[in-house]
Structures are given as C-alpha cells and as structure tokens.
Image (tube, rainbow over all chains, first blue to last red):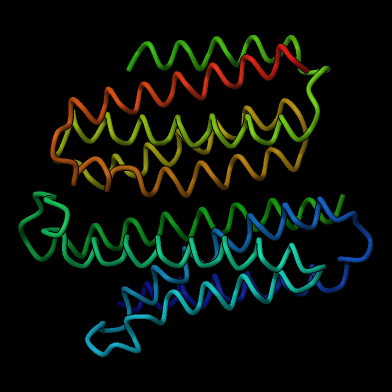
Length: 153
Length: 130
C-alpha cells in the first residue's frame, strides 16, 4: 500500500506545480490555449487521484463512496475558474468525468469478479493493482511534463 | 481488426497531404475522434481475443490510443497534440472494462464498426467541404 501512497503524494505535488504555473502565466496566452490545457490536465489528474483514493480508502461509509467524484469536481473547478465562465463549465465537466471513471477503474481493480475478469488469487489482484497504479502515475507525469513544456515555449 | 489498422493508416497518409487546408477546429475534432476510436476498438477486440491478460491489454490499448491521438494531433498544432493524447489515454484505460462486461460480443463489435465507419464518413465529408 505504501507504493500507492508515495505515488499519490508525487502526483499531488506535480498537479500543484502545474497549477502555480497556470496562475502565474494565464494572462500571457489566448483563451483557446488555456482552455485546451485546462481540459487535459483536469481530466487526467482527476482520473489518477480518484483511482488512488478509491484504492487507498475503504468504501463502506457513504461519504467516502462519493469522495473521488468530489475531488474531481474540485480540481475541475479550481483549474477552470482561472479564466471566464465557459471554461469553468468545461473544467467541471471534465473533472467530474475523470473522477467517475477513476472510481470505476478502482472498484474493478479491488474486486475483479465485478467485471468477469478471471483472476483468482489474492496476490495476483495486488500485483495488478500495483502495475496499473504505476502506469497511471507515469502517464500523469508525461502529460504534466508536456504541459509545463508548452508553457515555457 | 487488421482492416481497421489499414483504414487508420490510410486516413493518416491522406491527411498528411491535405493538412494545410484544414483549420484548427476540425483538426482538434479529428485527433480526438481518431484517438478515441483507435483506443476503443483495440481494447475491446484484444480483450475478446485474449481474456486472461487484463493488465497487459490495458497497457497496450492505452499506448495505442496515446500514439494514434498524438500522431493525428502532430499534423496540426501543439494543442491538438495534447488534446488527442489525453483523450486517447482516458478511453484506452476504460475500454478493456467494456470488453469484459458485454453480453453479446458479435453484435456489439458489428455495432462499433458501424459507428466507426459513420465517424469516418463524417470526417471525409467535412474535409472535402473545407
């Protein structure tokens, strides 16, 4: 479990750095550029964070069950509110979409019989979980690196 | 499945020629649609063929969506590149799950190919018109 915790902290730090760059430089670019970047980063980061939250916390109480969607909504709102109102709508939509999808993938990884996936033993489930979590973290790192590179140019 | 690969390659080589007359709006839509469709088709078809390798197939279909969306986006602009890449990644992570839960695989695959051909015809018509 501690691997997923480390990945969670890494991705939150990366999202924070992207958000700071956004806040500092969003007046320099035109609206379309900012809208595209908002869409991409809110979608992928809410997906990854919702996946980690679903894997880390137990989903028995109702509040924890809805937490990944709320995280996605907050990320989309914060990133979208940097520019005008239509971008807020765009950010909220993409963030909530990513949150729902990440929750779904997390639920399937925790319980593969939900999806008729023929994985039997407990060790295989844990191994699959680690592989997919590391892969998602690498994808998040790639996309945020691309976005930071695009702000430099 | 191999026919789909050839259709995507053919559209790519056709778009390389006419890339100067397409505006950025149409370019963004083309990269999103092609990356998403490539990821969806590869995920569902691969999980139907090899149902015992869930993790590997998720990784492979994500990479396919990433590469196809990125290549179609690189024809136009940097922003279309990032948009197509992100969309391909999300749909590629989702598509093997759809492939495992469907009840009637043959009908679903035929319907998906119908949808793909419809998207393809729309793209070609809008390229001709622009």
